[in-house]
Image: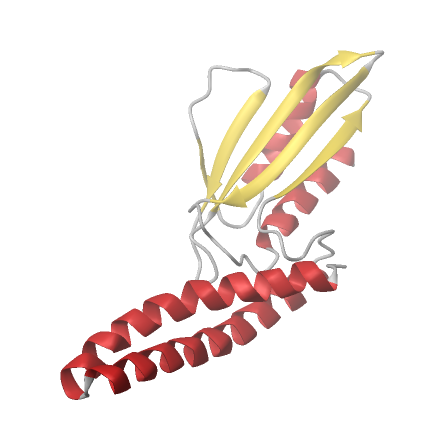
Length: 178
């Protein structure tokens, strides 16, 4: 579960990221139709109210869905997990590639020259611009291959993914372990 402080910071980030653009856009209208002092106050208040409403709506939906998906940190968009497997790295990467291809919104793999690293992209939905999934296998030590699975938002600055990155990581991890 997310701590109260991290949830508070998450809501604040959402509020600031939505209130500032809204306040600036309404300022244009207010400065045309109102005296300067009243326009400044109105644009700040409307920006803060819009930001608070959007933070509450987006934040609550994101946190509920991320918690329902079982995310260890529901306030984080980028998710990763490390899996230890008793197999060779190439086989581990191949199993992960098959799991990625099975994801509903899988689009393509990026061209990579490294045999133990693969990067894939998923498509956009109304919730996100898509994700970038990265698989990295390390050469085995004592017969154990370490496989890193990471999923992050395709667009930097994404504040909410509604648990999708954790769902990606979890699906790939479960398929590789099986």
